[in-house]
Length: 420
View 1 (cartoon, rainbow, N blue to C red):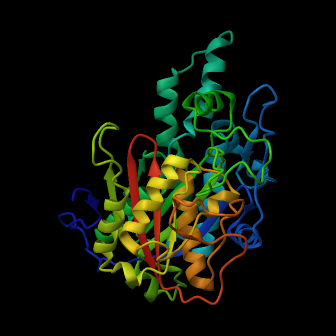
View 2: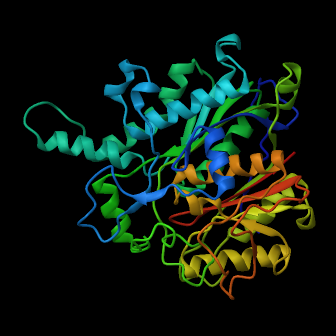
């Protein structure tokens, strides 16, 4: 079995921690709620944020639905001096980071100078910035960067703006693995905590609801063309017709268990295991490596399959991809062997932000002892042998361990185990 589990030795000269990294703060920007509290309440109500696009005129496109973060007014959350040099995704990221640090009850300014950093995922957000630069390039006068430079600059500045605003001068970085990026970023952040970082802001927020990005979604041929928001994104359903794009995600504050304990911080849960794998070429006989990522993550956490209480699925909303994921889950846990949910049915697929939001949902599910529902999907397809939680939240269950799965375009797979 091949893959990339998370254990890593401490860097030379670094203060090594115990290896236990815990989440002490959560910040959320999602189509069905701005802020962790409003979002989680909407999730438990089964309230969807998928609706007709308003960011631009989509009336002439065959797909017209998306998950937009409603009610977000950048001027209310981001300093005015930053507005000219930021776009939607960076503004949403700054807002989520602010909430996560406030929720953790920590002021980075009180930490040693290089003790805190930021490791985030990024993927599609560069489209909006790139389109803006291309429009400027075609306009008269001025010097403008190329589209390639725009993407590169965006990936650096998204994490960089968080670091600059909060004085996070420690190890930082950006991981680009599409939908898997939100998990991969947290996995890398755990490495930094193990190497001695006191605190890392991590996770992902993404946004690419602009004409240029929309053309890319359509060209790929996997986007849902349905007009009914309640029937557009149906993970594991026989009627699944593709995914709905969305924006948003979650940022988490990750720190060592010792540091959190020392300052009396509230802990949402422990990042107990992580692994990443990469799919072979499409024609290869061994197919998806998602199951391998899950097995490696469980091994990293020293958790048996029968100790997993819930799986937060990738939930592609496409028949072939859903069937492959269902088969991977059934191979590991047995047919209908563990409750499965895909709350992204209420937000759409958020690129790198999607898996980070699922991690937040898993942590809140463990805290509140409730499994959020997969909306839209009524009856699970017969070739998807999973115990999918639909309709309403599942309560009265004992939850200690959750497995979160994610797949990114191009063959990326990631899995993470979180525990109480």
